[in-house]
Length: 165
Image 1 (tube, rainbow, N blue to C red):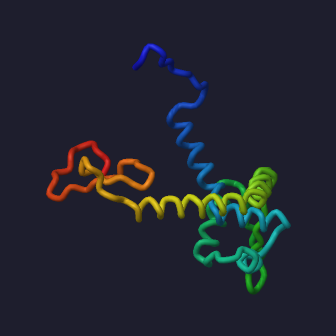
Image 2 (cartoon, one colour):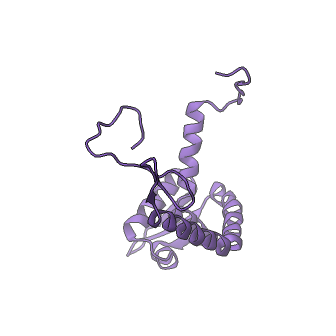
């Protein structure tokens, strides 16, 4: 470590807690979770209603998402003893607290969608151009049109441990 390096203690954020939080964030940030919570924010619904409103979800993925949300305590599943059996899904109080931050993310995504799509297109075009314009330099290395050194693949070279390929 250098002389200027200092460890910054983060209270209560050990490895296990960070891992647990990452797992929760990954789950609630999942595309289908966001869409199902958004649909259920309108009120309790039957499975088929949710399935029709969540565009593109398969029955298997919807079932897995609802079970996962129920397991996390974000959704309740209420079965009614009728023939045929009726099952309703609804957000719990904890699930309802997720609606506001997810809505804020949705508003942000909607406001920034066009700019992000344009930036992605420019990035892809720029990188596509670099791939197509690699030429050998005097030192034998490949360089892109911008002059940056490109990745060189050497045939029959033994891979070295610890190096990215």
